[in-house]
Figure 1: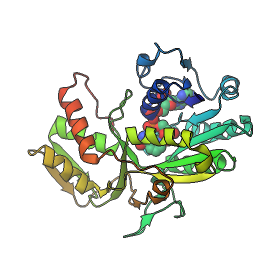
Figure 2: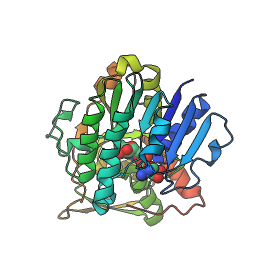
Figure 3: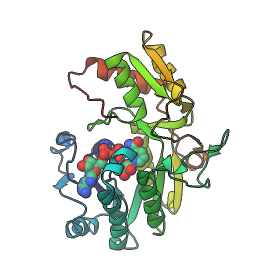
Figure 4: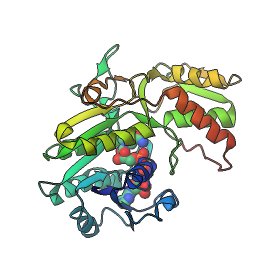
Length: 311
Ligand SMILES: NC(=O)c1ccc[n+]([C@@H]2O[C@H](COP(=O)([O-])OP(=O)(O)OC[C@H]3O[C@@H](n4cnc5c(N)ncnc54)[C@H](O)[C@@H]3O)[C@@H](O)[C@H]2O)c1
């Protein structure tokens, strides 16, 4: 049993990860403002190994009180995604970067931190080349820049691991429909039409269950992984936006795909990613994209929840 603090633990990744860790018997503490979902952790309140604190990570006294009590710190609290960060510039820097610096200062040598960043730091990749962990980081948004800078701070600490995550897909207790796979499937179900700009932009994807399994793998194999940065994605899911749309169309035959040739995507990310390093260290993502699309189609077709398209 490990003592684990997760900031932002009520979010898309956090609610799923907290669930898996609590069910494995770890002592999990979550600090979250409950900015979005207020119900994403309800199913965990029955467990004595789950502790929830409703609070702001910018409250450093509160944060410190809990940081010092835990062996593992997983800081997920953040302003996430380029559009949201552009709208909240000051707070983005405070939460995504300054707060991470504060956590690092609070840590004792024997504590451990596992940090998730985005592979959007790779910005615009080179044609026909896979980005690996040594590729140049050229983030093109404030979100990307704060995450890249925070990773640098985290990796100055000896007991640290950083995961550069691919774009996640799949269901979580706090649902995000702005993520491209989730968004395309929801739009396909609701409107039966996908409008795509810059269809050949490349991306790497990963299912949320694989992300959480990788965190658990890193807790169990901390010594082997510490001090290192890893790309984390599904190697069979390095595909373009149009390939993704066509995969969805295969399962929803009447779906119309409209390509806008002269319109720019506000999100200019374009790259393929190599996940060989983490695979060599013993973890491989396996949850397939087709299975994930089936999962999402089932949810959006059957659920009575009115999932808003918040992209
Ligand atoms: N989802 C992805 O595809 C992805 C990819 C790469 C990296 N990440 C990183 O993973 C982390 C979590 O992302 P997510 O997709 O779960 O996002 P999310 O928005 O669903 O979760 C963020 C959580 O943080 C909480 N939060 C925000 N500000 C807070 C504050 N000041 N104090 C306390 N709680 C606060 C929110 O209430 C929310 O529950 C982020 O650091 C993000 O950069 C996510």
